[in-house]
Amino acid sequence: RALPQVRDAVVLAREDQPGDQRLVGYVVRNDIDIDRAALQLALQASLPAYMVPSVWVTLDALPLNPNGKVDRKALPAPDASLSQAGYVAPQTETEIELSAIWAGLLNQEVGKIGATANFFALGGHSLLAVRLLAEVRHVLGVELGIKDLFANGSLAALAAAIDCGTGAFTRPQVTAQARGSESIPLSFAQQRLWFLDRLDGGSSHYNMPSALRVTGRFDVAVAEQAFRRIIERHEPLRTVFASEGEQLWQVIREQVEFGIKIRDLTSLDPGARELAARQLALADAETPFNLVRDVMLRASFVRLGEEAGVLLFNMHHIASDGWSMGLLVREFLDQYQALRSGAANPHGPLAIRYADYAQWQREWLAGPVLEDQLGYWSQQLASLPPVHGLPLDRARPAHQSFRGAQHRFTMDTATCQGLKKVARDQQATLFMVLHAALSVLLARHGNSSDIVIGTPVANRLQKELEELIGF
Image (cartoon, rainbow, N blue to C red; front, side, top):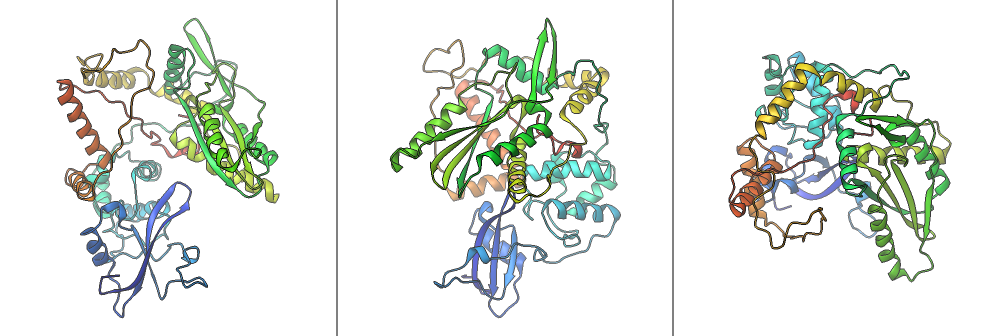
């Protein structure tokens, strides 16, 4: 509001698409036209980048409620209002294709993203960047890397890089496989998690618990039916694992029993209900799955009141990842609403199933391709210490307990801005900068220059895999 071109303003964190949260700035002009580029630069001078809206909407006036306060629910979702200062229409065929891909991912109208636009400045983030790579591969037949997105800041620059030969199509497409009587192999990710489960003797280390706060009347029977539809659609949730000697295979069951456990806490005092709910959530999170016989999804409803509760659900990592959790929540909400309203099933059978991917991966990652991959990592990890050299305050236990302490701190604005500038200058993400800083810290305390840190990543670089629960 201190800027001369702005009469009034409000900023709202919107999530118009599940999992795609972004800051939207709503501005009312002060007798002069709004220059969004100038507005962006002015805010960047005094705010960290994460607090600067990525999308702007110009309004004649802010909607007010009867009390004279801003009616945030009445603020419109951004659409064509994502106009860009100095808009330059895409010219080449690749620019036009990229503009359409960006528009789809950023939930914008096709034709509104120009050649000078920057994907990250328009609200793109790391998960959307992975989806962008998959879309480019699917539409343009080019396999780019994350570094290509940073090295070519604008849409036109990325299009030019593609036209000049950046990226190579290296992987065959995943297709549906014929199901015979032979055993279905595990994917490498499944095999890794099965091995770790056997090594730990069956633990909760790779549980993936989550919880949804529920307000209003919750129909448990409908919720059970919604989950059954999801389990029927996604085979990893009803897959168990069998072994004989060195042979290992996955068994996809046709039908499984599934129900939601009811935990009623309404008899407790209101103040005690939240604590009891948290204890139940923790107990469920720490209950292991049996990979030989269990359904890889379980759910329970903690009733806190007549129209209040918590829906707990948990999946094992062998059948799920962070991406899958988002898919599960979206599909559950779709199915629950459809069943409540009597609408048709909103999700049909999958064209590609996870077992198809597992078979494809085993066929593709074989021979020279596998040798190249193994050779690269063998060279990268050669001569590394088996255990870090950090000085410890007590003896290392025989089995990892995860009972270490936590240290929480708040980073000041100036430090955060400085780190983000380093990331921009080095064409890196903030995560990469913080990862490097942690490595330096550990190296100094451990008196070692070789630091090994494991990092979970989203790895769906093929569009045909985006709808699968698994990985």
